[in-house]
Length: 59
Image (cartoon, rainbow, N blue to C red; front, top):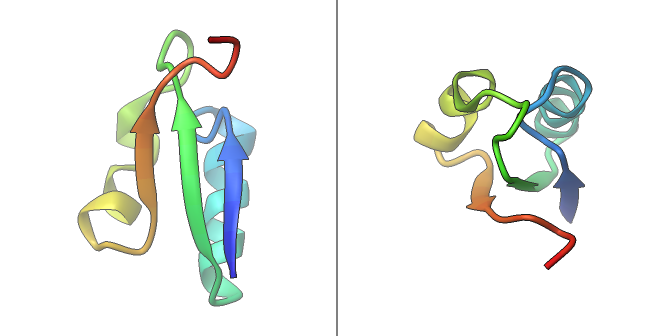
């Protein structure tokens, strides 16, 4: 199942993403990277286990 994770590059979001991948879901991470770090999710995106969209959900 595809699941949207807002703030996915932050501490909580990146750990949630890891859990979702372990449960065979496909996380779609939306983060503006103001406080989150791309390095927190790079391994998931590079391995095509998650999709990343750099955006602010307030827009």
